[in-house]
Amino acid sequence: MSIIKKEKKADEEIMTLSELAGYLKISEQTLHNMAEKGEIPVATIANQQRFMRTIIDDWFMSRMTMASKTTLVKLCEEGTIILPLSRLVQPEFILFDVKPGSKEEILSQLIEPLHKSGKLEDKNLLLQLLLDREEMVSTAISKGVAIPHPRNPEECPVKEPCIVFGLCSEGADFDSLDGNKTYLFFLVCTSSELVHLKIMAKLAILIRNKDIVYRLKAVKTKKDVMRHLITIDQEIFAINKWKDVI
Image (cartoon, rainbow, N blue to C red):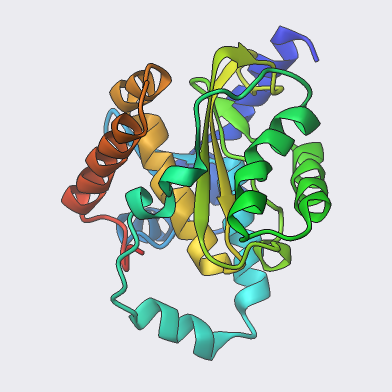
């Protein structure tokens, strides 16, 4: 894919309030209210609401799938369990030596800690689910960050919510939408669609924080990673925008 085409895809990936309203076929005011209440993943840039198409697609499909699970969703939404990013990324799931290579090679490296920890039995299954998701559109979004994840969380063989953090200091060609190399990887694993969406919303906040992204690219220790994730957790709580934060 040429750089020009990638830049075009990156532009199409970020949607304005008006564009998303047309995409979802709802009024702009309704969409604005949903965003203000934390009912739909949104990032605020220079006081303007912006939406990432890949995350919105996941959100939309989950609403269709979850329609028949009203009771379960209600229980989840009424829960008060707090599960910050700093708890989703366990020390054994932090990799500093991700080697550049094909998508399959990179994803295999990210999957390995899950297998070693006993949280994942079938490595090939998860790998195929991740590759299938990449076939749709790259999860390498921008700013050197990628968020690989299964298209349908319910199919994820890792049941307990967790994130594998990987740093590729050399940078890897992960078919990023902006045409640049990818340095940071957040492999999201959970079999709950509701939890998946909330994790993606949290990571969207992390990605828009240029300072945190820059610092994560330069981390040397696991303590550094955890410290920066805690900073993001504090920012999320301060924003008080995401309802029922996990």
